[in-house]
Image 1 (cartoon, rainbow, N blue to C red):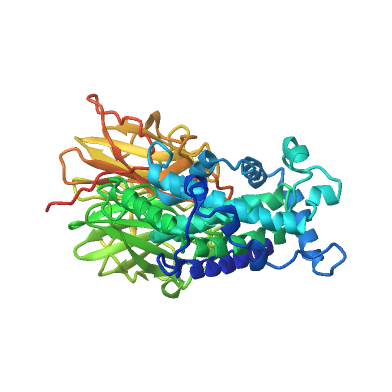
Image 2 (cartoon, helix red, strand yellow; image 1 turned 180 degrees about the vertical axis):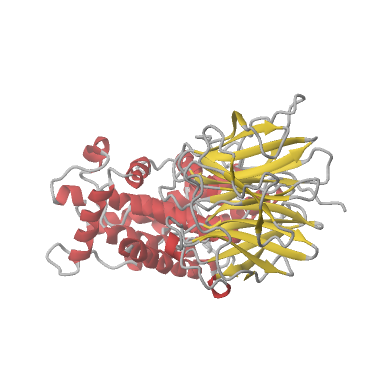
Length: 560
């Protein structure tokens, strides 16, 4: 936890420093460019920004301040065999194509020399400019790389010989990555947090694999910030920025004039999305995807067209749930007679009395939702099912059922007319186990053409095997025989696609699946983002496999 907080503090400082760059504007000072600069960089060699003037000299090994660098170097060695270490090894690549792939999820679109020539050209020239300026500082300071200084192996042994004689300070990879992050954030300010986090992690990878000290990386970000600020004095750069902005804005899948949602749907780390239609608006209620002890509230998002989303902050929070201590998870929201009922899991319950499934109410879908009972509605393990991941389903006869359960078991219960109590089934039982083969968590029920489609998540929620499967039945009670997988990872797009819900559009057979997934370059299990795709059915009524995308879905307004 201390490492997480320390890294978070450093990241916030880096993001704050980036604001200075965003305040820069094109056209204040004009620098002439030679033909050499126009073809490859924004400044000729003699006019490059002076990185030596931007950053201080590196600390020497006998300086007391070097202890910080040494501590980070030792920390990096402990990370190399973990998932984050594997990503750091991949980040040793620095080609434009690799870096384009690196930022795809954060910016919500694919970009390449073929798809977005103006954006690609802008970033290629800008990173070449920052690299050239960075080399001046590397040559001037000639700091030994840590693996050379300590005569120790790195996380990427195949690069050791080629880098042995090149200087360590400031980090070239970091300079290029941060340059790209700053420019993309200026072009796409609504996604700046996610973009800057990717740029930050790219630089941090160099410390983990042992090719740079922490100060090499930190000062490289400072140098890149200064270089990007100076780039705004270049006429060519400003013109290329305009072309790239126009290119992004004209793309149907993203930009100011976009006609499609793009994926992720909105910035931020969110998971377990509950998608529901209220009137002429789509609503999504996700879990705030952070460590359990920090999960003490939930935001919501609304849209009239699936493309433009409005965030509603803290629609439910600890202030209105007296027994909530941690792990506020996986909402299910339903409306009845003008009242909105918000079901939630709390406290990651393992033993009776620790927490469980609760219900809160409000007279507005944006809340604030307040605890209706003062205690959990379900607070014990029945049939082996942890009381989490509840979904409330209204059948055509007016009955309300709740499906819930973790730990590979799923129960269903019947809700009373007040929606805040449980009532027995016709046979007198209170709980029915309906666990299908492969079930892990995240149940969802959809009724279409008289058939009940029961869906659930399989695999581990932090891993690439997380996926969605389904069954069909003639009854809400099952039996539910697994038919197949309908949503899963695509190693060209993202991993761990799961914990979904389904929304109905205005069209006759217009359905949307809303789900979360992990960006490819992320090693943090909590790094999940909310996405959307169309859900289609075959002529036999079976659900067709869903292909996950960066594009998302076209705009679609509700008609009531």
